[in-house]
Length: 170
Image (cartoon, rainbow, N blue to C red; front, top):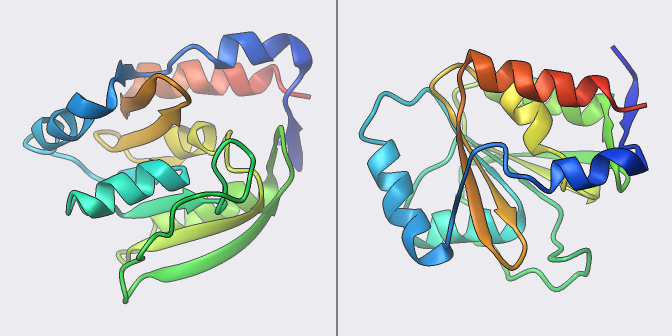
């Protein structure tokens, strides 16, 4: 396993394609609620706006990964995090997935307490290790700028697809 995965330029277009199903913001929350009627191991939110939207809708998550930015600018809306959540600070530069981020996601998913990973850098690629590390039947939700959000129901084929994408990183 790499210590740090770097996103190559030629893979950027491929990663703009949704890993799961893209939903417009207005139907995303009802779709999440519908998904949660099925057995769900973990709920994982990637991004500040996604996390805030879940909290505002009273949809509980097990793990959130935020960087206090929206579109790479420090203008993310304030997020009232759950009082009893565990906070894990992580360094993760743009266009990378560090071993520290991987390890923090793995640690958070192994615990029963709600955890928020606060990234110094960027969390844009955090959905990839989240899908790989999440138990089957988990849900990973991440934003797609100007389009809505993507909901991924974790299963073996999705994990394999993401693992293959990650194998192209340098």
